[in-house]
Each structure stands twice: as structure tokens, then as C-alpha cells.
Length: 151
Image (cartoon, rainbow, N blue to C red; front, top):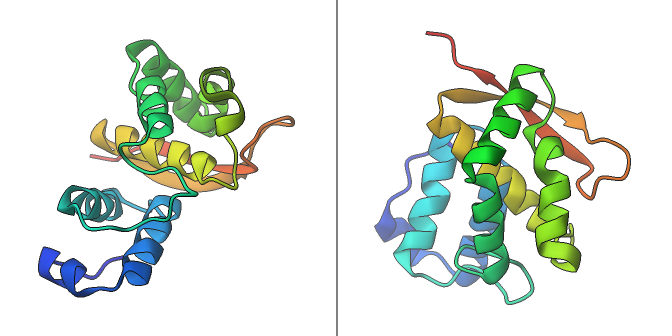
């Protein structure tokens, strides 16, 4: 995702190309630029997803955003990052409580949760670390760790 992509290029892509780009962008949130590109696609208004997966603007995505951006939950995310654990592990129980059966891997909810956490932590000056296995009983199988960027 390092290539600079313009809105004109997105407009010229087929639906399938945009859908693949969106899926890859959510799953491969390697840096703030990858997040920016997904946000650009969403803001473009161009179609990019089938009805089976959650995406920006959906009820499920709004619920995930509310959980990830809660000031109380931000503390949980930061504590997990500081301890070298995946921040998703710290708030996944809250996500499960909030979304119930709508939080699952097959509709992209686990990937979307990881993406939103990455977007939040990038804004707070963190960078992505390695992925780790999630705790037993988690819906997500693995999740990224984050560390504060060095000055």
C-alpha cells in the first residue's frame, strides 16, 4: 500500500478492485498511510463492498467506533500497548457485549475492530508492532501490538 493512489485512480477501478483494496486496507493497517487510503476510499462515495461485510457507516461499524473511541476504553488500549499486549484483547469483551453475534470473523468485524484500534493508536503517536495470539476464548485469533514511536 505504499504507492500513492489518487481519487481519479480509485474512480477508474472496478468494483472488485475497490473491494479488494478495502479488504486489504482493513486487514493490513501497517501504517497511518494505509489507514489514510482506506479513509479516502470510504469518503469517495464509490461502491466498494458487498452487503455481507460490515463497513464504514454500518450500524456495526458505528458500534465498534463508539467502543474504540470511548475515553475510558482508550485507557485500556494504552495500558495494553504499554504492556506489549494486543489492545484488541483489552476491549474485545466490551465489543462482544456491545455487538453480540454481529462480532465475528466471517463478516469482517474482527478485522474492522483491529483497523479502528490501529487508526486510534496512530493518532496517539503509536506504531504497529508484531501480531500476537489473542487470549483463549477470543473471537479474533491474532491481533497487533503497538508501541510508542521513538522521537
